[in-house]
Length: 293
Image (cartoon, rainbow, N blue to C red; front, side):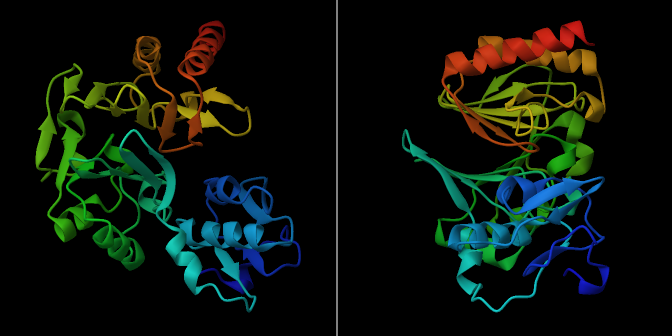
């Protein structure tokens, strides 16, 4: 819980504040961009909430902060805001996709998603293990599978697996992060889970990074590829590549052959564009990295 005694001096006078435990993960700035900004190596409150929408977004940022660095000193009723998560992003093609909020410091605030299909419910990477999410997942039919893109973003996957009897899916090269996972993907090739779901082998950020590809339209990318809010363009993290940037570029180039309209990353923003726009963005990014590698 945020400590008013550690309140950063950059905060303006407002009901919300950020304290010195902030790790500058960008979560609050993504969720409530009108009310949080960046200064040096941390976030701070730059604007008083002026309406219900800004207030709700700011409180959602508080709930999602992985380090509990955001505080609230006001008197507004906030009990119902906790029910904003999971937050629905997609409801089409017979599927529902939700952003879970409640990011974890164990995964440096990586996003996780809850996916409902006609056949199963999925957790794509893991949020923090908290009672409100557990209860919501129960009300939504539980969790059948937990797809783990790579070792960095497993967070509390083991706790959710135990709670729901869910089967965790991870690549053999990442297995040390969840050694008792129920399904282990082996080899260095893409594989089909069923007619709608494919796991794409995408080494680079880590040795055994996987992408979750659904219905030739939805691409959950872990830490492989994201949308940059600052650049307003597609982006990959060269400075945060832990295995091989050369391999990551090769993996990214292969995505030029993949049709997708929804980009759903762990770090960075999610984005919906036409397939043609996504491909053009990806091509431009690869050209940039080729010229500036």
